[in-house]
Length: 336
Image (cartoon, rainbow, N blue to C red):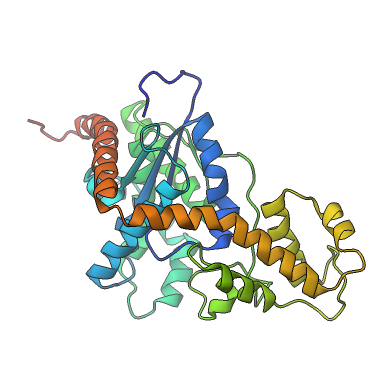
């Protein structure tokens, strides 16, 4: 990160879990705006591989997914020279601060986290303590870098609230140690829904692969998935209540073309869903093609990935160590 950045720039932190290839929903909902976010702020982007082990996976799979997610961050155009792009597990202070903050978090606070209840239900065979303390590690991720702002979706707002509560409690005991982070309010990404069940969010963990578009899907796959998207029997393109499938496709088309709903309705006036789906498929394929090509190119250059990851870890560690030294001193640990 440029040490000469202007003082009015904010530090924005965003970590993404290494749990599989992101979807079109992730891209249009968040990633598409990250390059712009990075231009206007001092950004720290990371692969949250420590968070990924709350769900059991094969070591080789975790390593592969972590590298793939890191390559995806670079492919999004997040310049590692101007931003910090790193892997969470390469900075040991995350785990250390996570433990300290565990001791400043009340059991009742942690037990109110709705994501723990949701994930426990989905992974009933492995309800581990890490799943329960996940929000406290997330708090450590944020507070370690004195982040001013954090982009959060609806499902993460509660985690930012507990982060602020923990930070405020720590500060009330030891003085001004942590910044209290705010939610990042930038250009709002769109909420993209399942292509097969447009009442629910698009998810990479959906057992029906036709329900989501992966950022690494080929053009042919994208076209097939869009053409098989659930719509309705009316065969008229307009945005309205009760037309969840068409509304979702219109949102996707709008994000990829910049056209508003009124323009889209005019463009497809008198045309059927076949023409509309073909246009949506082409727009999505064109939107994702350069990203996919750049991702595939970066993924073949392991030396470049390792260089960027090592440099990112070094920059991230310098900030993390500074915060951690202050925390250790305040709590009363004897330091060499």
